[in-house]
Figure 1 (tube, chains in turn green, orange):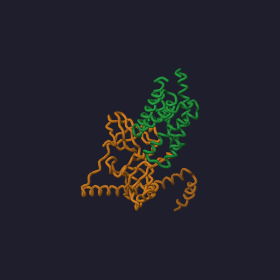
Figure 2 (cartoon, chains in turn green, cyan):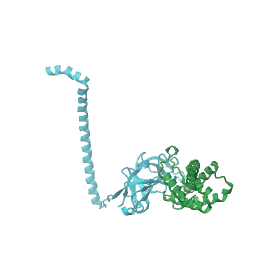
Figure 3 (spheres, helix red, strand yellow):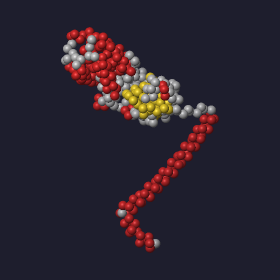
Figure 4 (cartoon, each protein chain N blue to C red):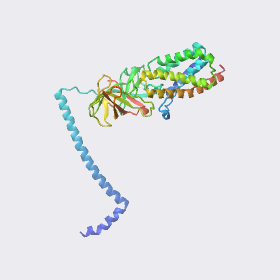
Length: 155
Length: 229
């Protein structure tokens, strides 16, 4: 996967995440695309590139929110390292693997944020909701990037 | 007398004709408006008198005149990319005189404060974020407290929480909450919202927690004002 496609995906999904309206029928939840992108990188790219993608995605998300700068980058970085370590045992083409990776990435950042904001029963419900939405989004992000790679001939 | 007798059937008939009927209504409305106008003028005179008295008392007590706000308008150009923080991005930055910790308002009331500023943009931490703390007062009962973003799992109706309110405090449901001016960030008297529900703090039992419905509609923020002085 070339550098241009990687950067383009990062900027596209960051813009999509911050510009799309919240889902009122899901309690005003925002759809997060960056955890799915980080999961994609961790399951697909070479180790160093996957880590770079995770850190950059984290820093971009922190820059676009009021979160303590670097918090999301740290979580995404750790997540990428863990997935890189175990990915030999995973089949990245299985939707369940993609969904699980997306849900864990989003759930981990949500857990860290909820600890900073104030952990409570309501926060647990919100973490589960965020993880569930990210699990649904992850296979779509995988599909979209794989399709663009196919078109660009960089598979 | 005879003309009155002769005219009566026509007056009765006129009540059935819409144009004449509406003229009668208009006359009644005019009368009501005159009465309302009279009442408002009386109120206006009373307020002017109170204003003059306020001025005299201020001079008597040598109170400093509250400073008028100098504001700068800004457009909202982005929302928070995360599900856990509540902030917006505005199109004014250091080149427009914006600095960190400046209050942001609109016509309805307090929105939040600036937290990070670049040359052309600034991020505003909203009142509904748990990290935004504002020293506040219940307007009528003058009970102080701290307002911050409340826990809001299903974020359809964002609300705030006023904590550290005296456990013996008595106040009306729907009472307006305003900024107290303490803390040095937010000027005194900016509307925050309305007190809607009260309960004793479950952890300590020493204070009351008050749910505050914000005066501002945070779902429809398009233009805001930053208080720069």
